[in-house]
Length: 381
Image (cartoon, rainbow, N blue to C red; front, side, top):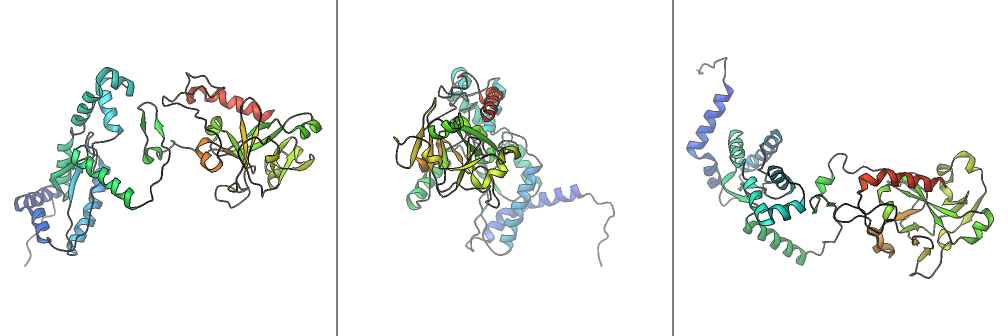
């Protein structure tokens, strides 16, 4: 009744025989025509970059895509599937730089030229298209590779620009924001590049800034008063231009340092906790010849104390008391506080002349130990 089945199956041979049958009978194209006119199920192919060999992660992604597309087709829907190749991005440029033995935007412009470098990138990105096509067919992923799109084609670029322009005109939801820059290439970094492990690590520290106009308190103690500032991004302290405080928070002066009264126990050592405390309003410690709701502290560098209702005594999730009740304010937050602008790092990744504690010809990585030592010394005073 049934044909005998061999106990020694050659699964590779079975798969290749089935693939040959699909190819001979043009099964994929016929399945698409069979569903023409049916309810569409829209599928957009996220294309791989073909300047490197395909890997196991490409197999996983395509198997999952194929699963959904086949299921929707079996439900009677029309599922158009068109392959594509991503030809933009830093990996393509870096690969060509390695082939040429150069590194960086300056070398590209001066030694190769932008036009020639672009031509080489176009060639490089297509190096392994054939291997991707063979892999796609071998794993049984159904997609139209004959009419694949390439992201460097003018038609594709123009369609993206047209879509963006249409969206910005009809939906007023676009906003301007800063972008992280890669100094080596002079190009912006994407969100997924910044999301790689160990690229961005959250740390916290407390720093102190002197309030030189607090004459009354200085006369009592014989030393200047300091504001204890709390931050989870200590590398932005170099561009700090203001201290944000909340007028609804009660502040206390302990050993010449201003903190939120609620946080004295968590900020100071046991010996300092027993020191005399007195109420203080940080925003009254500075002169008033600046814009409304802002106070400027005199000194070698102009810093401001600004009133901000977003300052709290809570941690990241506002679940428990944390910090000092005083927040640092960097230039990117100036729209909320109207504080001045200070740019610590230039496009080349080196400190600008505005940063006095760092030389112009050094990068953050080289100068970081010195900056940390000076910050700790400031805290100790």
